[in-house]
Image (tube, rainbow, N blue to C red; front, side, top):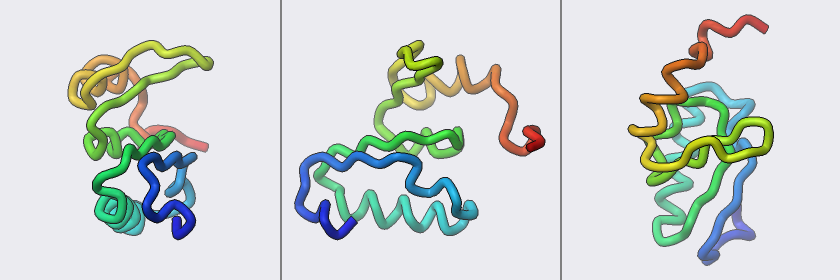
Amino acid sequence: MLAAHGSALVLLDEPTASLDSATEALVYDSLFAAFADACVISSVHRLHLLPRFDGVIWMEAGRIVAHGAPAIIGTGFAAALPREADIVS
């Protein structure tokens, strides 16, 4: 993240994938504070993170199936998916 300091665009690929929820929240809080004036684009699979973003692009099989505000996207597509706690690996 140090190399991105001063950047107008920050691209992240699952930056918190291996973290617990509490640490994940700290990372995103710090990230958004450090890049308050930047465009932050992050791929996420944890649906509880969607409200942290201004906009969401929902993709399935490499295609955009929905885009818009997190609240709107969450009520449609996310509601039909199993919750993370329900997924058994």
